[in-house]
Image 1 (spheres, rainbow, N blue to C red):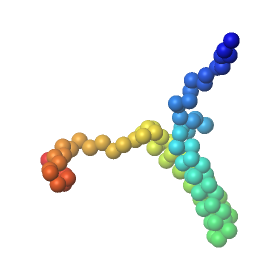
Image 2: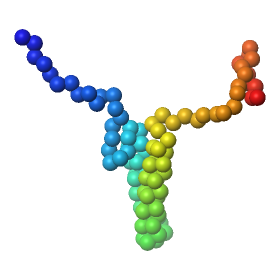
Image 3: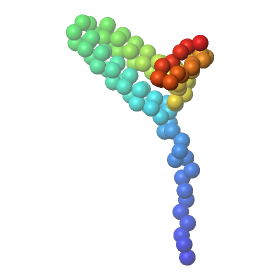
Image 4: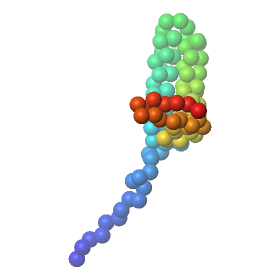
Length: 95
């Protein structure tokens, strides 16, 4: 008698963590690490309070930028409304 195993149906969906999907998880992690590095450098070289402002500002700004880019979609592409004519040599002529 053959055994039946449950099949996970969500394998083709992007990974989701705290509202970020797919590649934007890595963008969020990168903005956190960048904010920590810039904040720590500013704290050590300039001033502790200015470093705290840079730390918070860069982390929040990076996460807002990532969330804004995510609204464009996982595979956002630039779309042009122009008409291109390709000649024999592969050059593009814009109409």
